[in-house]
Amino acid sequence: MCGIVGFIGKNVKIKHLINGLEKLEYRGYDSAGLSFIEDNNISIYKKEGKIKNLKEYVESILEKDIQNGIAHTRWATHGGVSDENSHPHTDQKKDIAIVHNGIIENFQILKKELIEKGHEFFSQTDTEVIAHLISENYSGNLFEAVYETKRRLEGTYALAVIHRLEPNKIIVARKGSPLVLANSKDFTMLASDITPLIKYTKYVNFLEDDEIAELNSEGYTIYDDNKKIIKRNEIHITWDETLAEKSGYDHFMEKEINEQPQSIKSALSGRIKNNVPNLVELENIKNFIKNDLKKIYIVACGTSYHAGLSMVYLLNAYSDLDINIEVASEFRYMNPHVDKNTLVIAVSQSGETIDTLEGIRIAKEKGAHILSMSNVVGSTIPRESNSVVYMNTGPEIGVAATKTYTAQIAILYLISAQILFYREQYSTEIKNIVSKLEKIDEIFEEVLTTKEHIKEISRQYVNYKNMMYVGRGFGYTAALEGALKLKEISYINATAYQAGELKHGPIALLDEAFPVFAIIPFNGLKEKMISNIMEIKARKARVIALTSSEDERIKEIVDDYILVPNIEEALLPLAVAPITQLFSYNISILRHLDPDKPRNLAKSVTVE
Image (tube, rainbow, N blue to C red; front, top):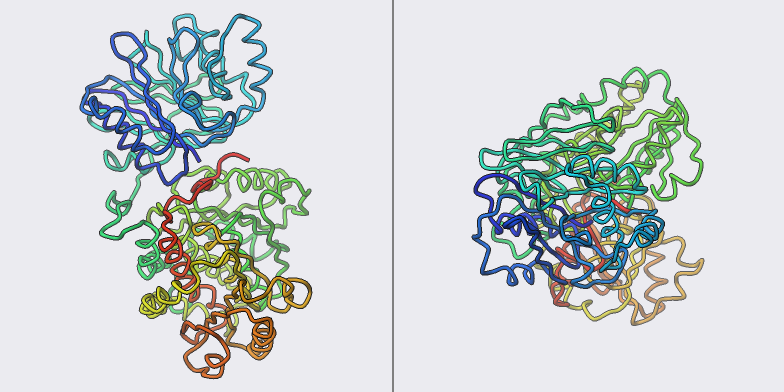
């Protein structure tokens, strides 16, 4: 949510700032701006709306050489969407320019204090308060001014600050909101994540909470909260910039759906040997799992929660382990019953999800062991965990999770299998699931051959305002994710229920204007599901069924159907995912929406 980019050094141009912002578009924003120093004066350009508006605004100076510059995409929190509220912000004297991600919780107290000292404000944002406070603390040394200022800020922030009298430096600071530093032969850089930087270098450093850093043309120096220099090895990023390009597809979401055979293969590569899990990342907690583990708690949000729920169903079906799952935003406030015998699994695509991060911090205080899963190497949640398993899917640019969702399920299943293997409870059923999991890329290939059929079906549902997804067992977790995808990118009011719950309220919604997407299980619950479909049809609601090619009977009672390979029940969420993703994607396109940048959403949720 929101994006920061900055450059300092030789050969820096305005276009570098614009290009960097474009790499951060997926994070979600409603305005964009940039600032640089010219002739000892601060220059600021900012525009409400898309980055293209800003790009057109600065078209004539894109090739302009600048010594340093900072840029920002804003997501409105304090103050509405306007040019005035867009970042960068300045102090009253226009000496300082600042960009900021996060929320300053005590900004009203600080603002009142500054107004009493004669400061005049020009926006409704909390960020402008920071600029004025830095100005108040400035006495010739920008680093010291930012250092003193950050000690008074309550809340979350990633800051990048420039001063017109010190054009040879950028000062950055971080608490609770990500910030990445890097250096190339031409300039030193900063950004909210690695996507704007990977074009120039594959070696980066992640700022930690309460740290502050000074950037110049030669590199950067990181300091702790006591101004002591920190020496930390850079992290090597293995993926290539081309992975963050559309590669001929119309949208990133379409590309990432179609990448799933390869991305799941990458996620599982080297992690299964002879039908046995080989997650070396869990070696350091092997003895804990084998001897002391009594309870597992999964903490996640949104799509990651749905992936975690599939793990809960798996372990409930094939083990006697006590496993729970909770939405992270509730977990952190519910006095969770975790202790030294609890393994807390934190699932976060970005590794920066604020609710999940705060949740694991609470769990650690209670003595729990933390195992995290993320797609972003070096992000905060992995750094604060006892163990981490990276997804290895490459960057996911589309806001709505696709390939990272299926990778999460696959790896969570492997984590389950590894735990059971360590505990000598590795059953034939689990071994069979792991064996089939190793070939899940072939299932994805088969499922993706139905995409033209899915497109045709999508056309029939594009004008509905409501839709219900229903399932049983593992099909229910798939239904939850299918409904979320439709909501996220088509803005259709989609809801999901366990099919057995229909009679307990939700069936009252159904009529000819409220179609149902039914995910039919392959096990003994199939007959129950067929009965549910008959109840739905009796209310005149249209039904799309996901069914196996072997069951002609279902095809006769539903309005539309999509074939799914007949696989183990536990793998149903994986096989179904590309279908519900493509269904949502097609409807979004038919409704003339941008599936990569759904309104009001951001890829990384770093504020409450």
